Structures are given as C-alpha cells and as structure tokens.
Amino acid sequence: MRIIFTFFLLSCAATAQAQKMDTVYVEKEGVFQKYYLALLPEQASKGLLVILPGFGTMPEGVLKETQLPQTACQAGYTVVIPLLLRYDMEDTAFVFQSRLEVLIPELMQKYKTPEGKFILGGHSLGGNQALFYAEKAYMLSDTTLIKPDLVFGVDPPLDLKRLYNAYARSLELYPEKAKGSEAEFITKRFRRIYGGTPEERPDAYEAASSYYRDARDGGNARYLKNVPLRLYSDPDVLWYILERNMPMEWTNTADLSACIVLLRRLGNQNAGYVPCLGKGWLPNGKRHPHAFSMLDAGEFVGWVNKVLYNE
Image (cartoon, rainbow, N blue to C red):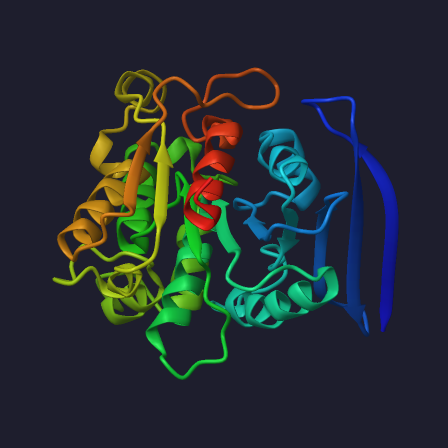
C-alpha cells in the first residue's frame, strides 16, 4: 500500500490569511483507493463540510471553480474535497457510495469534527451523489451510515433517465459532434453500468437517481423529507437556446424544481431552490450556467450557521 500525506499552506483568495491543507492519496497494489484534500481551520472545527466534485473534476480543480472551500474554512469548518471515483478506469455504478460510507467516519475521527454538524453536497454529478448518499442514510433506520445534517447540490442532474435522454437527443440531433463528447461517454457508460437504456432498464435508473420523475413519490428523494436541503441552478433560458439549442426541460433545472416541489409537498419547508441567474462563470472567465461559481459562498455559510447554530 502506498500512502502520501502532504501538508502545505493555501492562500485564501478572499483574505491574506493562510489555511492549512491536508492532502491524502492512497492506492493499494497499484489500484486507486482514495484521494482527498482537507482545508483545516485554525480553531476547533465547527463542523465537517464534504464537497463532491463534478464529473471529471479533480479535488484541486474545485478550489479554482468556487470560493466555497476557502470561505467555509475561514468560518471555522473543516472542508474535505474527495475524489471517489476514477471515471476513466472504474465502471462500478455505486462505488462512490461505498467509498463515501467508509470515508465520512474516518474524516470525523481524524479531524475531530463535532457530531450533528455534517454538511454534504456537491457540484453537477457530485451533487447527485451527495443527495443519493443522504437518501440511503435516512432510508435505513438501523443503518450505521452517518446522516448529513444539511445537504446541497449545485446544478446536479437528479433524474438519470432525464439526463440520459437529454444526451441521447443531443447525439441524435448533432451526430457530427458525437465522437469523444461527454454525451457519448455518459450514454455509453450508463448503458454499461445500468444494463441498458432507461426504456430497457427503468428500475435500474430509478434506483440510481436521487430524484425520479416517473415515480409518484419521487423515488429516493422522498427520504429527504425531513432534511434541510438547497438546490442551486442558473436558469439562463436564453443561454441554453443560443449556445446549446436546448429547451429547459432537458436541463438540470427541470429536475431541481420538480424535486423541491415534491419535498415541500411532503412537508419539508427547509427544502429550497436558489435561482442564480447570470452567476455561472468558469475559471477562465467564460460564461456558463453550469459553473460552480453560481453559489454565493458567503451567503451559503450564513445559511449553514443559521441552521446548525441559529446564528
């Protein structure tokens, strides 16, 4: 087994104050096991914030996409950004779930974070994974899984049937752009790990989705009916029309709004949708409504403090 621990200082973009970072990489007999970055507050930790990156994004890439890790750490939270899955090498559908189940208690013990102050969320596909973990934790009353106290997702695809069909329609409409595209990669991967298309294996897609529109009760989403939850998207209809020739029902916003409606109907008044119109920008300065930057880090930390500490 090879384990690497690296400690260094990361300059916080918001202030001149430095933050200590712990980098951990583990592989066993040449096989990837885990990799994460941890930003450590100077004072006793107020809680554990785990941020799951989007599809294809390495943990260090998250630090360029959003100020959330630095802002939350400065506010006193231990922030961990893990890589749970090597998409280029691993085809197991739920390997992210099993690795997260093992990682969370390890992080809490190692960094001495307080109980009842666990925040879990992510960007894009990482947001779906965060909600899925939370749903499994609350689904089983006798589970040993540590339950998140707050959950969030930044423009995550929740309904994997909707996601597959959106990509499939795009490939059909624009076959000249198919080769090597994300749409081609995702549709092939989904058919491989779920055993076919959503029409061929609807039960598999429902089981893997953190919200499923075709299920009367929303599928797995119903298990979040008592959990404080926020979902963010940049619903820039004009951008999707002009840049992608894409109707809004093909976008993640369609999933998010439907999921929040369901949860509020089930009685969760702490389930909220946050519109971030015009706030999505990539690190290179390019406008993109899927960008992690849409989340206002300071406002988010204020929400966390209010829910967890009534501040």
